[in-house]
Length: 283
Length: 239
Image (cartoon, rainbow over all chains, first blue to last red; front, top):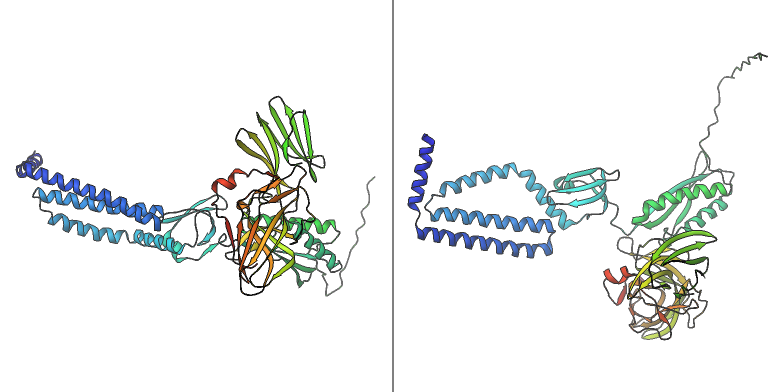
């Protein structure tokens, strides 16, 4: 009952201060403030969307809009004679508190802006960010979303994206595919080379330029290691890698060329005793 | 043959190089089949089509659409003195498209190639472009054209540079090329002008004039709708 009485007194005091002139003045202030906010929001959006990403432009425009609306509302209260000094001080304190609380948000926001200017990747790029590999799904003002190769959705804060190593697999138009195979020492190296060279030349997605390189890379313990380095369009890199290795195996086998497997000659220091146990066959 | 397929008979077969195209008329539908060595490669049913056409198109659709550039490397080099010009021909591969047509509207129902396909990078590894790659001669007469596999490109090469230049390759934008054909399988493009501006750069321009006495091939829709239409190609990384 006491509280009700206090509210009643406050409202009575408020309404006693309200005059027609003040209502008109407040309305004018609010309408002008609203129009100003609305107009500035559009201007800020139109200017920034040309130079910044859409989400950033929208956020900036909305920020301008709400700040002006807030100023207009405070002015309206001042018109009605409400002491806004306390409100401003309270607002300042709230601002400082929020500032401390939103340090991470602000750093993510700034990182998002810097990422926009730096442009290390764009949506659709195959990337590896902080050991998360996949396709960039979305770059928002606070975070970057990556869909991993196995279909998992990962949200990485922009602050982390900005400070970590980013590998963009799709930035260059071409990528090199490196394959290794080996043939037994007794096999005809020239013949094997010819088989591989033909495969590389016939594969449509292996680029003619930069030219493919095929060479003996190691005389290994099990066989002669051959390295095949070819270039492919970045979008087809994985397909070329998959297809070519299988084709090489298939064609080398077809040509009768042995792909060796690891072999070890085991030498025993002392002679081995072999005991033969004769087993009687049961009739 | 290139051109309109006469769908009067119940089955129409068109033999190209390795492949045979079959058009089976069934009621108001046409069953289209692409066959190689007796094996079915592709099949499609087209309902209520008025006409079907087999036409040459830019060689950028098979096996995948990766680029809209064609890089022709000459098997013979052309050396030009300063402020000089020459005219000749080269050949580029073509893909073959089958169009279903009704009124003004058409739809590509199949694209394939009778050529071996190869791509190359034109330019440096960080900013070059992928291009359909083909080796061909620069010659002053039309020679050795393979029907259903190739098209002739009439070239005019102008050396505007004040030094001798060696012209070894040309980069063409398939979006800008128009293809023209005869029923026999002969195909060509409009005239292409190459202006050499330095010993490593040139500007390629495409004529707007149609080739007289030949049929103009349709363009697959995607090429014309979404691609910006610059009538020139800059060769910045070697000629």
